[in-house]
Length: 314
Image (cartoon, rainbow, N blue to C red; front, side, top):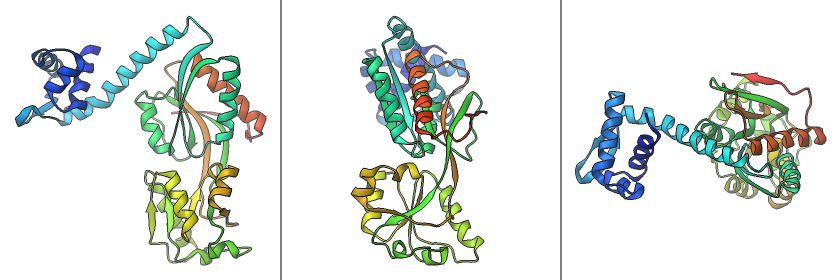
C-alpha cells in the first residue's frame, strides 16, 4: 500500500463521496476512483459500497483498514516533522494527551520548565478521560500520554512507566447532606445518584459492587458524562456523588468554584497508576523526549513518586 492511496482512501471516508474527495485532494474523480480500485485489488477486498448520488459507505473491510490508514499517515507526518526538527534542538512540536488521573500541576511545571529553555517549542495539550485518549494514542495522534493505568491492558508495542499511584476519592458538594456527617458510611450514601464517566462504564460496576459487598442495595441512578465542567456544575448544584481521582479535585480553583467536599469513606474506589504511556517500538522525537523527561523530573520534585518508577511492558 502506498501512502497516497491511503490519503485518497481517507479523503473518501472523511468526505463521504468520490467527487468531494477528488476536490479536496486536487485530482479528478476518475483518478481517485482508480486509486481506490487499485487499493481494493491489492487487498483483495471491497472497501466501499457505492450508493446513489455518489455517496460512499465503508464495508467491513474498509472499517478494518481505517485505523491502520490513519496511524500510518500520522506516523509519516511525525517522521517528517521529527526529521525537520533535528535541525534545531530548540524547536519542534510535541502533542501530549492528559488523563484525569494525572496531576495537572506536574504537567504545567514541566511545560513551564522546557519553554524557558526552548521558547520555540510548540506544545499541544489535550485533556480527557484516559479511556478516550488511549485510542487516540494508538492511532498516532499523541507523542505520548500522561494518564491513569489501572486495569487497562496495553496492546503490543506500548509500555507504561508508572510515575505515582493514587486511589479515587468520593466527593459531593458542600451542601450535600452527607457532607455534614463527620464519618459517613455507605448506608448514608444510599439513594443518591452518582456522576460517572460515560467512557468508563467499569466505574458503575465498582460503585455497585461496593454496596453489594456491604449487603446494601446498590445505586440505580447514574449520570454518565465526559464533559468535565458540565459534570462539576451538576455536582455543585445537585445532591450527586462522584468517585474520581484526587488529581481532579486538588486544584484550588476547582474547590472554590464548585464547592467540592471529599467524603471520608474508603469505598468505593480504584487505585489508578498515573503513568506515561508511549510506544516501545518507536523512539520519541527530540521535543517529546524533552517533555517526557521534564514530567518525570517535575513529579520527583513534587514528591509524587511513591516508589521507583516501573516500566510495564505489554
